[in-house]
Length: 281
Image (cartoon, rainbow, N blue to C red; front, top):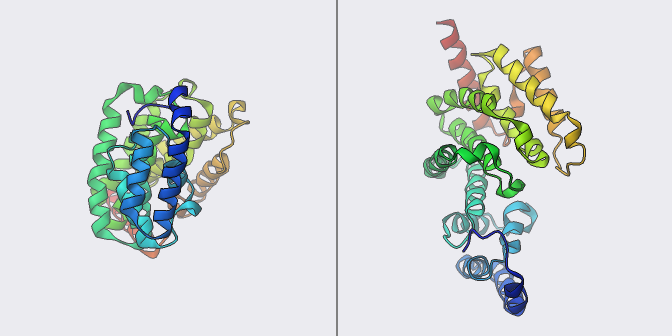
């Protein structure tokens, strides 16, 4: 039931009053720092009433989350683990937690999330329809796959997981070779570009010419007229062009960091050094 895409009209009108009550209860509970009560109301809204607006607001608008860091973290943990929430909501809660771990340097949380995100990635890759998913941005399986892999990139940098880092660039290159962007919604195709570029960029030292061609393909796709009406807030085309310019100038590809901390820069530096040494061996 939680995976249903929307509420039937009959349910929407019959449950309007209780939906409003539950929304108010969730908001009040979060204001009081009572995460368990808030999650109970949110999960009832999602599972029983198929009303997902409150949880989407908390997931995709950072300003809507509690300002207290511990409360916000507990909320995301609860959404990620809540069986009543839709699968993509649970997934993006885990992605948000991964970036919180990367930003705070929480290696214990990073290790915990790494295993779960790897399982989620494997599940998406095993589904042949992922590469041609026609769902909207937040529900799209390919977009979720690339978002999850970009989050794993940051966790691997924090954990200095050289094996995981070394696998991401070739993985992204192989995925790009299989993609037909015309089989994806234009808005989705554009919105996944920046994180796709971040994953591809880990090829910079071991296969720079391959990376250049991959980035040029993404730039060409992002520049197509089909994307001109996208409401994506990020300048994905500008990001890719900047990444390509950095590659060609030999500048450090620090733009791949969604979260920029000294620990992550150190992890990226260690990865570049290991890649350079491996190339020279």
